[in-house]
Amino acid sequence: MNTLFMTLLVLIGLTLLGLFLYTLFVAKRIELGMPPEGSFITIMGNRIHYVEQGSGPDTILLIHGLTGVVQNFGYGLIDELAKTHRVIAIDRPGSGYSVRPDSASASLTVQADVVAGVIDALGLGRPLLVGHSLGGAVSLATALRHPDKVNGLALIAPLIYMPSQVSDAFAALTIRYSWLRKLVGWTLAVPLSIRKREQVLGVVFGPEQAPKDFPIRGGGLLGLRPSHFIAASRDLTALEAVLPQMQLRYDDLRLPIGILYGREDRILDPQEQGQTLADRLDNVELTLIDGGHMLPITQPEACLTFIRARLQAAPEAA
Image (tube, one colour):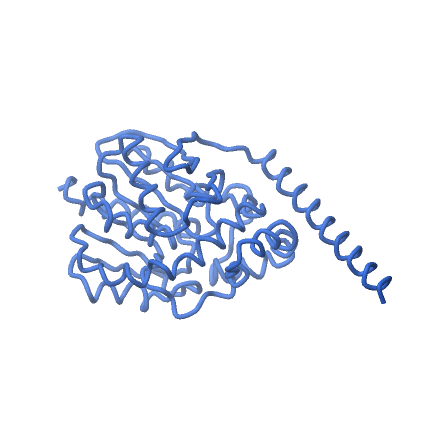
């Protein structure tokens, strides 16, 4: 019995070691092939990676969603907006090439404070915040906590209310124990993500198709790293501590808010999220188009039109 038990322990150990080495190999290969494209700044202990282009009278700050990276805005949004505006896109703490210490909180309030810190450190004045998905919730939190630093909100498929259920695409991220999150991140997460890639992308992008160049141009490969999995899991599980209370304060929002949603979004319900807020606040304008959740990638022209309209609606653009 003891021999059998020891044999099982050795086999489990060797399996975990093999998965760890494979994960490490994949992560290092990705980082060598896709080095950071921007600059770094340290805010509240977080090393934030950001890209900046353009100049102009108005400033736009782009904030990506759960498991996202700055490259999600690389399908024309940054380049086109930078022709007439100063544009900054950040990797949220722990995402992309941004680093979040283990001791730093993943809560929406802290992420909002980091965004406010970026605004101050880079001298952005009062930018228009463009938040996609979870980036929408971060944008809302920033506007609530730092209203003097935000000129308007352009929210694309945003998380606004605590969803009734988590999408199957993100079910693996609902790990609450730090030790287990790290164990899964450094062993199972990467090989399983590779194996289920097409299935997950089908949900996240559906009913539209993920572009063939998404792994490189859209930064999809950067998600195949343990640090990215761990950060996304922390982001997701931290929502329930803040978002339900934050929802109660939306009446305090006085700035103009635009919301763009795809009618066929498979991640967040446009009615539950966007329509509910539009019915609640007079300063919210909801626009629905045909499409899914990843509109910055699949519908860049529609997003550009939407963002430009929000710039015109912002007080300082009037």
